[in-house]
Image (tube, rainbow, N blue to C red; front, top):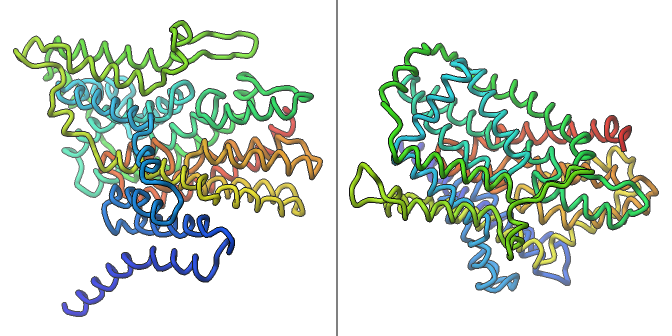
Length: 492
């Protein structure tokens, strides 16, 4: 007993000191640049935070707050500048989405939505998994990956709560973790498949057109033809993977769900209003920005407003959330659709986690570490092209695990433009794989907003995300390299 206690204490001590110790040693013994200590400090901080995130030494939200005191102490950023990263507009998108989701839960609409979904797509594990994955994939092609994950989280959690009462704890956790990870990963993959699905795609299109005006520009239709088949194949592979991961046999009697739906009774006034606002939210998200479909350009509703260019998805989310606190309830006199109880439910640790990711991304830039890492690609021009693409994809996936895919794309693509010119090869052979790889980071909660959102449900562990995400990272990189030397090489 005493021996086990000692071992447990030593393991805990290791979890505490491993990150800061390795980070300190990297600064003292293996500095990247002896003349610029800030980028060395930044690397040490990343190692420290990554260690504590992986081992969950302290709550993840607390680790995410470390840049607030570490960045000023190392001269990377001022406290004011770091603090500003914790109120990024994406965080307000998350807050608005959460308030809408909590209001849906308050009135039981999430149960009705989940039961209607189950009764329509079928009762087998495969049909449930396919339904949620396909919904996430398709939605994220047109609206932000964050909004997609938030939108599907409520019905998914409602379904999971139904399964909690039908399965033992171990099987219920396997089902919950697998389904939520599949939803998050499908959102990231779907976002990569259209030009408007995620910011890195638009960054690629802009840089490609600006730097290579003599080449045919890559528009919406071109991107879709190039990337959608790869994304769809990835989705199919991922479906079979998660179907195997969720290794439980769901022998469900459909009458159970039909009876549960019937027991909810008629849809209440509050449910109807909330559902209406939810649909309005989705429509506004879909139609906010215009779509450029090659020869056809469809304007978004924000383009007709005086200051439409200042409106983002988060603007819409917070606006709809505010309405929920204004509209009175019909069945509960004196109350509104949403109350201060919904505000109390906001997951502050997840909000900190979002902010920590944005702070790291900013720290990458301000410290000079991002530019330093980007410059290291110059040596690649002496390698075979296929190895260059492989190294670039792996690097993009790794760096995006700790910073935003937008920041990593903005930093790396200009370097690849120079590299392709020096090697006298078509620029898309390097730029396109790097851009797609920036969306294929799946291992950490801070890697992508969908990862952070589903992690906030508290039904997914870091270890589960690491294990599943590792294989998804490898699969994604392999598909990109193969596509780059088949359909992309032939079609561009």
